[in-house]
Length: 253
Image 1: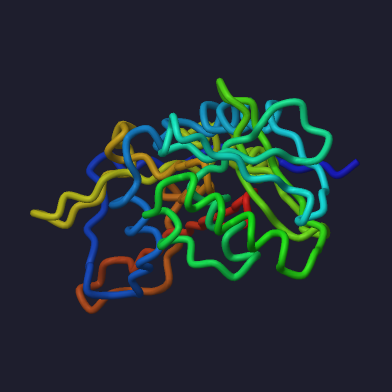
Image 2: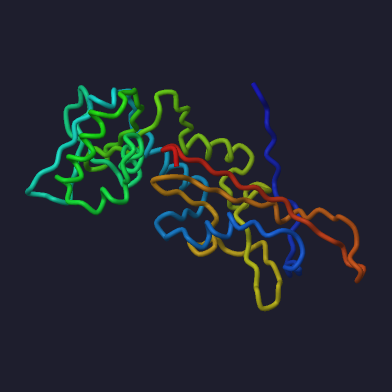
């Protein structure tokens, strides 16, 4: 069995650190995630994040089916709703926005155009594509979420890593991600003074732990243990902080 030691935080900077924002490299991926994630995709700890995506995976199941055996159903009584009947299924499954795009791509149909059509007309086009396109096996990811939803359509050999597995791997070194180990959600930078406070409270506005129905993203730093890389012209220590981010999509995003 592999033994891994989780290091605890050691140093604390009561007054924060002065940051020269003109130095170093800006990683747009991290700031983009922080800027674009809505409130319902933000989590305050790795435990909360793990519990959410774990429950989702427990309600999910996969199967491999022949694409030509899928039947598309649409009702004139509900022109906005399109469902699919999969082989040996007891109930229809509703495609999500993402899985509908994957299915349309499989048959070479423009998903954006199909979404603009009434469901019966979109269903006719999609069914035509499934019946006339080269038949192949696909792997589905379905979830019971008040109704049966189709979350993903991928190739039969798609090697899925569930989101909770990524969180569990991160938790081995980062614990709860809130300061119980060296690795934690970053603090807050005061842009008026360029003073970085590593001990800021974690809130929906400041967290860097995210999950949606399509992916998961985690950014953590070791900002209580700076690495001294020399001296600045002023004679002050030139400090760096370690950080990492991890991303996963269990639906092939």
